[in-house]
Length: 107
Length: 113
Image 1 (cartoon, chains in turn purple, green):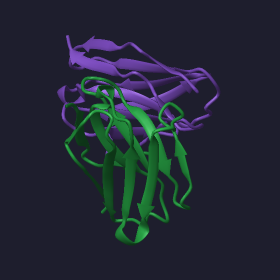
Image 2 (cartoon, rainbow over the protein chains, first blue to last red):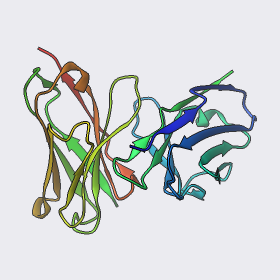
Image 3 (cartoon, rainbow over the protein chains, first blue to last red):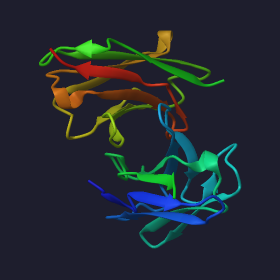
Image 4 (cartoon, chains in turn cyan, brown):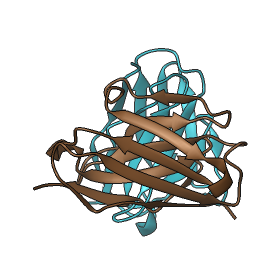
């Protein structure tokens, strides 16, 4: 199975900060990488697809990038509504696998 | 618009079988795949398996011996059955369509006697 190593597990940040979350794939997944945001008591919400493409309705302060087997989600100018847990997912191979999650919280 | 809704028992006894239904609207099950994902309380997401638009299924190998996914296209429903439940199967169970573009609200299942 492909392992998605997500870091950090917790990320304290201040409003207005620029933050980056990273997932490293244990095997080649191409650009079959998605990012999700999950708030307490809610279902996951798709934020980024194809590693770099913004999903419908997602604010432009969110962006995705890739460097080799490292995939990153960056949030520019953090807002209070961005506090959530973020997960990456590889869907290049079965079983699809999620990263362990990053909890973004106010410092 | 696309909607998914999971339904099923909130409480299941250990060693029993879990049966869940995902009822969808706004799209045809013959056009898009539906996946099941679960999330234990306070923990991360686990992909369980999928019903492809052509009726093919694929399961997480960790669950394969206990898991079955089927569908009724006429009723726009996808079913999950998992046997030999244990307390570690306590989780929120979600169905999600396409490549996880849309998700149901989830259903909490507790395994306890």
